[in-house]
Length: 85
Image (cartoon, rainbow, N blue to C red; front, side, top):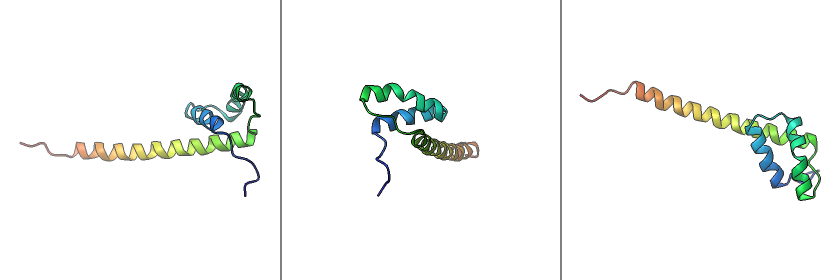
């Protein structure tokens, strides 16, 4: 059983966007203040914000690596493909 309640989906979506913009954890934590005020709930802790940001950055890096690998395979296949004729 987790020792903390999950981060609200609204905060997670905001953190995913901020991670994609390469925002530092401290700045992301500060930028959650207006959202927390609008939702009338407390912000997640700084540690939780950093954890979500790290996980999202890893996911983005893995996606980018897979995309780069796929594009490399496609482009290398096109470079060595014989033209008919």
